[in-house]
Length: 412
Image 1 (cartoon, rainbow, N blue to C red):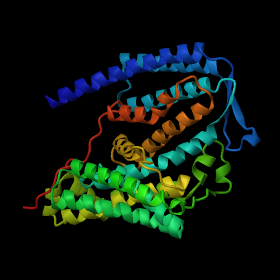
Image 2: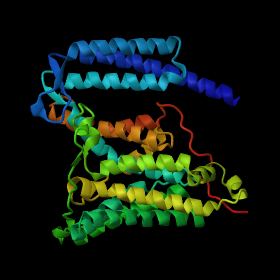
Image 3: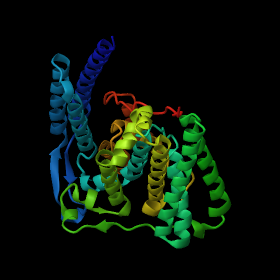
Image 4: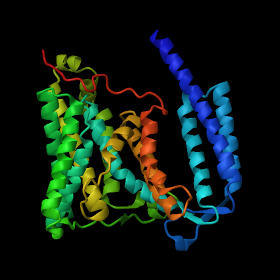
């Protein structure tokens, strides 16, 4: 019965994807093919003065993308791509976005390399939020409080960074995230409070506390809200690679740290004894306990690490970006990080890919605004949140969390 239900669900999803591709094909042909005039020039280096660009006829690209999407949609409805449907869907969406960018930049120059560099920057807090979620949910603790941990880290980073420099600010942000996650761990592990409620409480507490402290301290003492901003660190030769050079090799410390933390987390979860124990606790805590693993200790450690990662990521908003704290400046990036975690199927590398997609959507709305696109700015601001809704709605397929996720453990 379950297999039959899964089969019907997969068939329905396959049809929905096929129909969606056909609709995208029609939209691409009408809006980007018929509605485009001129040539879009995509600059593939960060420096506009180098004048390395690729000219693309916007209308021709629109019709070409429409034809490819129509083929994909027809093939999916008639025969189906099977296990490759997610890959094909990603290609289809990428082609549609390319045609959309060409339509937006028709008759103008579009700095693709600069946009990708900005995408990587905007993906940083989302990635740290996603990695925080991976670390906690791999041991079956749902961390809804990531938003609050990011916000708390941003506030501490601004305050302590203003007093004693960037290093002190980053350390303070990391400690703040760790303390908040410790509170989550005590509530969820020791007192078995509903984990979602505990996370929401942390979010509300941090939002109220930072708003209060901002009004009472930072507004009255602006010198305490003037943290140093980390400068980009350019890696010679690698930064000169077209398209991706500036994206990955001309960034500040937080971007490089995000990539390093992703690699270390992946190795630790899947190549170490600690990672094996953590995954065992997340899948079947009773069996892990039977084998002599201290379930509570493993959960506390992972949740503490989760908060420290989120707090470190929160420092990006101040020390890595604007240098000062504003009320609710995280603007839901913690929740988008949770969506990136789900999109990445609770895997650090998957979370990295998902965060880059969300960062791209975020940077795209800014770039399109500067191009004078006739789309209302309110709709452009919705772009990252629309992508979040699409992901959570399950368009990318069903993701399976750790089996014991969200379930308190009672030692017998």
